[in-house]
Image (tube, helix red, strand yellow):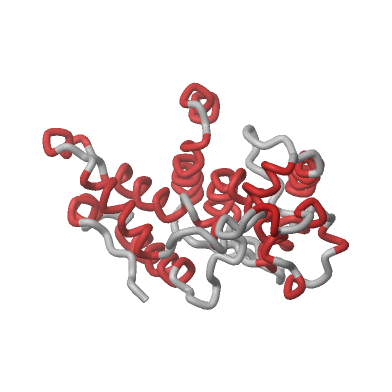
Length: 241
């Protein structure tokens, strides 16, 4: 399993600072989490690789985008936030069946104050109600198999069913996993922020933290990971001291 490594520019900014140790620890934890071959993308069966190679590519690209004339503006805290936000940005895609169920049952994952009004059960119910009104084209696009003609895939609406009716995750069909995958896709930016601040939910109730740093840096890094799904103006109120 490839380990995620710091690009030289970010390494140079972090070396001999208080950020260096926590960043290296976070790289190791995320390499294990994102590169776990037993985890796979259980809700995204048709997606391309989003494991350690993908994250390494994004991190390298972020460093390359820093133009040479602007490199001197990059502070150690900037380098730390860029690195941690990159580790977090697609982490929700690696949520397991048990992790998803734990998210809906969690008493700690209630959203980020100042940003999220609804709990995850309420957010899921709103999504489910919308899904019940999808037309055939939407059902095929989200739940269907793009390699098979739509006319041969039966009644896809039958998979818009409450979790309580689906039994244990081992019994979930690929179609139902895609339904959950669409929910996660829509909210993966919020999840990245929560994973930074609250950890990844687990069945035991003890969250699994992907990054190792003090709370303010975790919050800011998670917010940067979240911001790609937000309008720039909507970020101002959260960042105001």
